[in-house]
Every structure is written in C-alpha cells, then in structure tokens.
Image 1: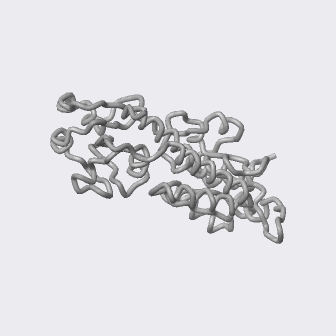
Image 2 (image 1 turned 90 degrees about the horizontal axis):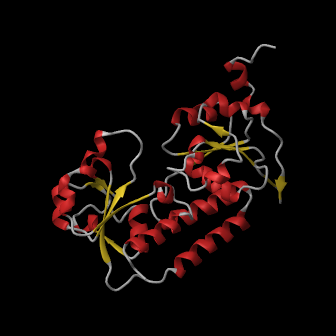
Image 3 (image 1 turned 90 degrees about the vertical axis):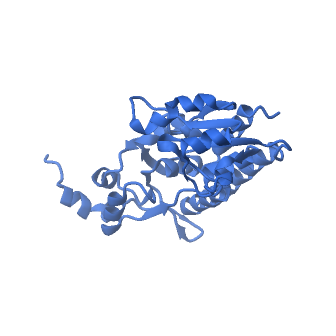
Length: 276
C-alpha cells in the first residue's frame, strides 16, 4: 500500500480528528498534541488519562525539562506539520515563539491550535495553569495545582532582612531584570537583583565591567551545554575571579518554563544564598 501524499494528509486533517466528549454542554478535546516544552509540562500536569497523545522531544531532555520521567510515557514530536497531522489531534498546544510555520499551517487547514505566551512573572504561572485547565476541561485540577503552588510559596516565608544581592549572567552577557519571570523568582527567593540597580529592569546586556564593579553576593550563571560556543566566552573571563561573592549555576529545567516547578528554583536559590 502506497503512503499517503502530504496533500492527502493535510487535506484530511479536519476529518481525521476524533469525536470529543462533552462536559456540561462543552466540547472537550480528546486527542491533544503539545509541541512546545512549556505547554508540554502544563498539559502533563493537568490532562486527563489518555487525553494527551504527544509532547515535544524537548520534554524528554533533562537539561531543559523538569518532567522527563512523565514525558517518557508519551510519543514525542518535533513540531513538524505533517507528523502533527498524522496524530489526528483535535487540539494542538503551541508556544508564541516556537514552530511558527507549523502553527500557521495547522490553523490554515482547520486544526484547532491554542497558543500560549511565555510567562513573564509568577502571576502568569497561575494564569496559564488556569487557562490550560479550562482548555482541557480540568478546572478543578488546575485550581488544586495553583493552591499547592501558593502554599509552597507561602511556606518559604517572607524575605530576609539582610537580602543578598544577586546577578543573573548568561551567554553574551545577557541578564534578566525584575520585570521578568527570572527576576520575580529571585525576589521570591529573598534576593535583590542588581540588574535593577544598574537600570536594566527589563533585562539586557550587562557589561562585564559593570558586573565586576557591582560585586554581587551571588552570581548565577547560565548552565553550560556540551560543545563550545563563543557566546559563552564571557562566562570564562578571568575578571569574574575578582568577584568576592559565590558563583553557581542553576539548571535551566528549574525555571526555563513558567510552571509550578519554579518553586524548586526558588528553594535552590535560597540555599545558594545560605538563607535558613
């Protein structure tokens, strides 16, 4: 039997979607495919058994994902339009800035797509958890997840009186300011972000000279990956040895996505700062 052509696959996309169950008059998705690391994790936390049928390949990468064990239960996808269509989804979850061409094509052929913006603060985590819960018909589970997240945050206690000064320093000298998810995570950990002291509230490039002069108590570097990159040269600059504070790296999996898993990043940052 000859394989179906791409045209046939795309042309039959809408017809291939499975019938969906209803909940109090609403039509709920039965075959959900996620092709973004962050929607992968939200969906794995909230989807009903059997509702989620595929997640992106990044969900299985321990360098980026906080849910690799859970991701192993799902077929992976690479965000390619033809492979997504062959999964016969009645809903696709995507990120604003990933797989844009695939997202546009899926919409054009009638496949429902829900696009999520990246979280820019802790409030966005709650908002996106609730939105995912509403999309999947799992509002009760979403509220339970938000409640547990808020309880975990409250259990950390208030910021210490002697807040330590911290700097985030990534490839190419980029830093995140207070008006970002990473900045709010620093604040929740009881740390003061020096980016705001230096006028970088929204983040940007932090010149090495300014970083050394600011001399933060804690330097949090981007986690290195295999191979070499000129973008990471600054992280090895000998001038960083002049800093008197502590230097450490935090795994991207802890906070690359705005999910309740960022509580682990907050706890680790408090430990790095030696707060009780």
